[in-house]
Length: 361
Image (cartoon, rainbow, N blue to C red; front, side, top):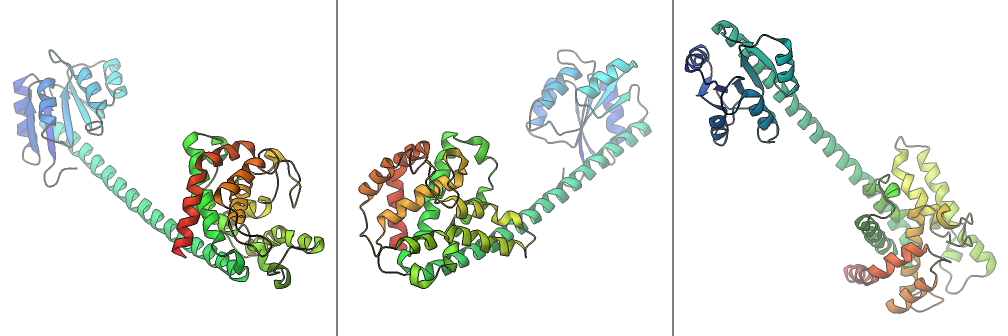
């Protein structure tokens, strides 16, 4: 919208009509008179009007051709156009309206009628601009509130994840590293256009932070097992495996006391499926192949890679190269073969993430 007086461009090859229009409107508006459509477009390079009054019957370029050109140009498409015409048939009027005109004024026009019609359309334009400003402000408020909610949710996720890491202190940095690996794999799948029907359904802004909770069930595993300095006995390992179902129980309890169940939708998938294996030999449910949700298949790679490169009471840290080799050997048995191929292509970036987190710690 113009600041101060509204600007109107009146286009007509009849100088008398231009004079009448200018005299009728110039007390209230800045009126620019133009004798042809060609000159209209030259003026539009310098002036952005609030309304265009456009004659239909003009030589060289008529009004229909001019409005078609106006509406095809994003710079001018929103400017309301009122046709000025001596035509009286409804077909011509309908044609113009279909092309984007907002009104017709019949010639010869009376100055009072011209003034009133112009006033009405400028009022509508102002109301539309006010509504747009209101919508923009509302969207800004919604965006700001959404960002605050995400920040709060992420703070909760971070705090819970840090609590788990505090108990399981032999795996320090694991949560941060695996979150970085998941972000890398998701970005790579998106860039390659893989699994689009699944990825488009994800709220990625919540999916990635939710990866931090994949081991939250360890909070319910006893210290005697969680911190054992050595390999587990079979019964101990069976208890350790329950951290997946314990984690789902933790989330279920939280969900009973929240009105935001979507907050934990992705977390439940990570928690319950990151130890499933492609050949069905994993836990807790023995899911096989694509029965395993894609986030769980992604976390399986991220989780195992990080375990391999990390020191454990029962093993030294494997080198990056050996860790990559072990994951490749698990292609089609432990891991989704397609995802292993993606992992292989970005494995060096896994090492960079691990190094960066270690240096930051």
